[in-house]
Length: 211
Image 1: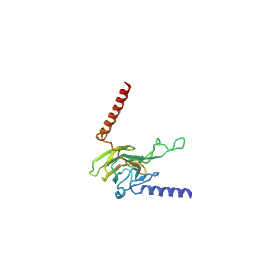
Image 2: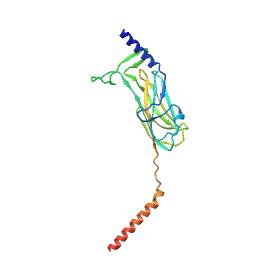
Image 3: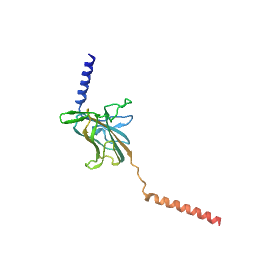
Image 4: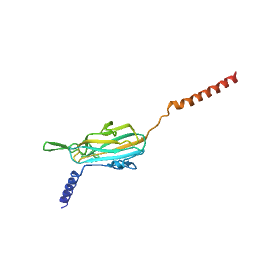
């Protein structure tokens, strides 16, 4: 009786997972802020880290998730996206390992069940309000040195193909930092020149007294 209950529970769980809707979501790790799927909640982002995530369940399907946001002031930013992979199999120590590979044949489709969740050909890109590409990177990569202008809309896009047996999941971080404003040389040149003149005058008097 218990075996039948376990089998039924397992089948129900698999059905629930495989029939789960596709979604992109805002998630929070630690004390970090989040990006929301609703652009109106991503206006005037201040300095800090913003988490976002996506999950897709239909094996073999492609997806494109988008987040739109603005920043409160001119800023620099970096973006990182990580593919969350879970593997079947255990090593001698009892810990999961990715080297164990087992595949099943379903008609013409060959499914690698070594990966429960996996994303194939994942890329992420940032576009400005006119659709101009500002940078792009791949799985577990980072875009850095992005210059963002206050009040302008930016679109972060994550795309890929669901390659896991139960779907794919990823986690990303948008890190916003204040822009460091360089002091123009023209503003400092007079002050620097005056300091040199005073220093030269001081040493001249010292040498004159020594003589």
